[in-house]
Image 1 (cartoon, one colour):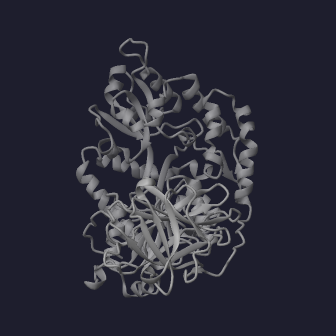
Image 2 (spheres, one colour):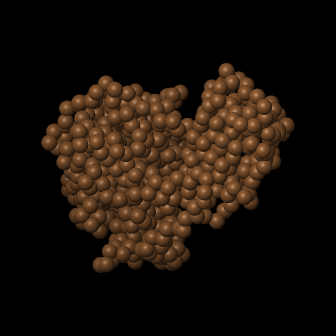
Image 3 (spheres, rainbow, N blue to C red):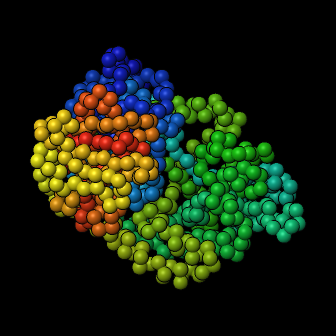
Length: 615
């Protein structure tokens, strides 16, 4: 089935603003311009989406929604053409942070909808029940028939018990490749690695020898200025030898593979390149491999396929030398020549509240990926050659990625690799970390335990008689919390009035906190709503925020920033803000209100703090 023809009414093409003040609220935020690409939503799918929420919540680790990036373009187009809203849950790339947020949202019975994940996240997301299958929701046949889907990689990495857990756009697959400086190779009189590959001699041993010969003091000042290898990836020698620290046993349980001859040989490779041949893999290259290679001072760069164009998008200066690319060298135990392949895509979070809307966003993302790569081909065609595209396709036929398994243990096993890199022997290094990794896998193999949820009635405050339970933060200067009455009151006979001197408090001020009797519990999504009037002039830099506040340490956590509207005519406004759940059911949290560069008076009334339980 080919791509369906776009058939949307003009009214449906306008994005709807929902009454939620949040990081991704409508208005005021710069968003990338959407590509004009046709996409039809069938009547059946539209009816399914209409029955779901107008807003879906998605985790894009490390992605700023304002960035001019292809996934953001897909989101903007999705919003324009469906009338739905995508709320980004902010996270970094840190796996612990992302998984804590996912776990907390599921435990709170208000799970997020989707997450952008990679081959480093699986099988972790599957075995810990962070994800659920996408079968029956995403139109895989349509995506595949249009060339928008990479079914082979999904089969290799994201299919469990016959069901798919991640949808991989056709081109979001990156074989890990060896880039090499052909000019330096000729200068050194070394054989082209492609010729070695054809003779089945492109081995780790030969690769190390060539890298050593490239590591030189060219100008005679006693300091190396030419190096063998640049890369940011520490685990590639395991991939080269088709092995990993973790594997599965006959029952499907995850077990340590630390005594495998293939793994021990990969450790020998790491020790050889990092310790025995000290300086060949230089420190500058390890921290910024692509930039180092682009300068022409490194013979080899080990990086993902996308470095073909990133070498010209993200470096200064761009390479001004001849280079080429081929697969990573093959270790002695990798006799079938498996290749290191990383990939990514989007899937459902377990309990996804809006599966049909989220599935539609996934389909938009897969389509957008094709147009992004068409643009890359047009821009970087001289580097993004047919030969290199075919090489990528061929390498994917035998795909392997060691960190898919090693992500199940602490720091992906990097602590052990660091010991090896410092020259320690295999046996002592392994025994130092064996118990830690066994403990990790014991937890992974155990049944997932979900916390007991503490539910409570909504906290409501109308401030009719007092403002008890609210106080000025301990570090705030020249500030008061009082009851506003008479004409100052928003509703009834009383409201809460927060007053402070902005000049005395710098750019950020904590205005008030709730006392301990109004505890916020972990594993709860809270919706905080209130009426308000801002008294004074606001600027584009004015921001307010809500956060969890630890009463023991006096520190805030996970602030949510939002904008309030100025009450220039004295009118009353209304706000609703969502506090995302915390993976913590022991700490006594309360709520903190703060502001940045805000006018000195805020009147609040009809505060309601309620737990949200969607599923």
